[in-house]
Length: 358
Image (cartoon, rainbow, N blue to C red; front, top):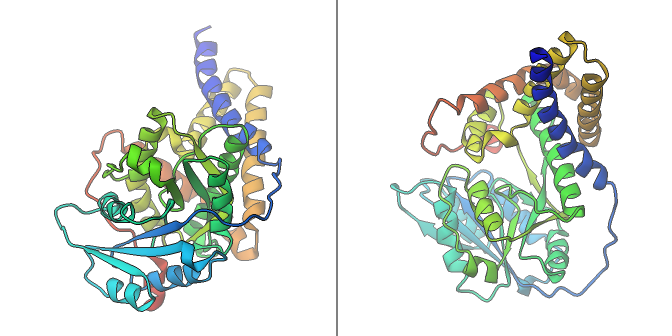
């Protein structure tokens, strides 16, 4: 009796987690029609940048290629505590550049607060946050314009990883972002709010005035997202706006990034969900439960196979797939270690563009 109760205590949360991924992923299969419309919202694209002279040019080129009326787009780069040529590159590209020097207050949250205060003095309707090492697809602002025209106060763009061929770290990150995008699209279809993801976040100016930015922790997006949730603000998902990003270039760098992200909470960690699933299945099998654990394994396998299929599988990526369990295990350990280890100071993650420039 006790053993059965223990097994149920493991299987029930695993089932809830499975449904939390499966239901929205299925709902995301329902496509919405979009209609061509005349743009009505003026955007400020805010780019926080700390020593991004290698990655920033690609981001600015993508913004210059946007399919949106140029007079309705303002690009503002916040050169935050930079010691390189970030500011000069921003100005050379024709972007407005704000220089912030405050070594005592380091981190993206402070750079955003500085940039948002400036952006709200302008006449833009929406502020879009784009990380300096990311690129935006040409139709992004038209897609976001449609979402805000439908009444949204906040929106999150899709985030795609563009370096799935850079070893197991790049492949695991690419599959993870595809998994998250499918889940977010489904929750939006079902009428729920989605999580902010740091880059590709868009906010109506009235929202920023009503709920000012004051998120300065290691996971500033989750922190501000919690404030919006308490204020009953729904964050919409906008799949037509795509942010292309690059995962950290090595497993060690990916783990460093996840150490910072664990400030968002362990419940959002997919590696820990998979670890719990393994424990639940093993316990269930040991106590004679067969169908239930098998169904959970099959459901998770299908979800991840869908994500792998969406990313694409080449011989190189297949080798990374075989090595991915080790990477996932390391990421799970990094997240779990947050229970006993306090979060450290903000540390900038290495960029693939920097390695290519060497």
